[in-house]
Amino acid sequence: MKNVFLSKNTGKFPEKNIKIHDTTLRDGEQMPGVVLKPEEKLILAGKFLDFGVDMIDIMPSVSEREAMLARELVAMDRDKISATCRLKKEDIDQAIELGVKQIVLFTPLSDIHLEYKLKISRGENIRRACEFIDYAKEHGLTVDLAGEDSTRADMDYLLLFIKSIDSKIRTFFVADTVGCLTPKRTYSFISALRKKTKCKIGLHIHNDFAMATANTLEGLRAGADVFSGTFTGIGERAGNAPIEEVCTALKYLYDIYLDVKYSKIKEICDLVEKFSGVALQAHKPIVGKNAFCHESGIHADGVIKNPRTYEFIDPEDIGHERRFSFGKHSGRNVIKHVIDDASESEIDDILKKIKHLSESEKITFTEDDVTFIFKECRKMVQH
Image 1 (tube, rainbow, N blue to C red):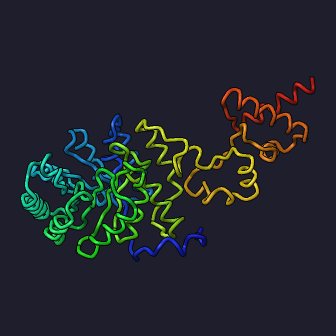
Image 2 (cartoon, helix red, strand yellow):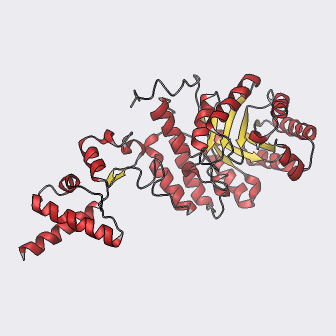
């Protein structure tokens, strides 16, 4: 559905094919308390590939089981598996041995990381990055590089670093490692890099200030070619940019259609929730159980008459469903919608009972509950 209301205000995207770098199985699993079994990762990888992601991120050096899994993923689709590697020969050699075709090397770029974590100079960081990029390319690998904490790096150093490597790599991933960007700053930041770089630009945005989706969208609008994210937004600390949110926002708010199966979104997010053990918030955008659920009498009545009154997209488009919830805010028309053979007096009685129980017990009811209450009320009257 083309959005005629926003099309004049969103700003034009560059004419390009936006790619998805899925890091659910790597950064997503780095969320505290999350451990995905190898068989679960294989199931999810199959779903991601069917959905249409362009790359699936894995980090073989984490453990022997992860290396074995990487080999199985390469057998599943070698062209779309990317191994994240430290600037270490053993990581690159392992990726080569596993049959991986593409890797993402990563190194920090902010002074605080270089000084306190790696304890190396800016120049040494550049030298090491060039050395290991060259080594990987000499062994036939396609190389992307992620600049950890790019958004807190000195801009002159960041540009010098990229200039030193951009003819050697495919994509430079800007990592907003602590999620400190704003949409406006993201647009300015990526626009500046776009003018100075030859390689593609990728986005890896964290959600510490709940702006990962907005920042990713602005980065893409500024000219980034690839975005990294996870389904449901799981990941370190407050997580990553949720793939389902970015994809649907691109389609419905910006008229940018990616070559993906949007109808698979809810199914995939439900699986990620199940396997990760991280429960989705009921009010989670797009895929939460309340994303298309209506209780208020005014809202429910509007949706019954025309879903567009309170829903911007059709839930079926992303594999979700519309529901009505019943409680103290409910109205008569939604009762009529559920029970079409109820009399006016029966509707009044049912609504009164629902409102009373909702307020006194702090509960809401489903459509099945309302049908049951109606039948019980009718039985009582008949006897």
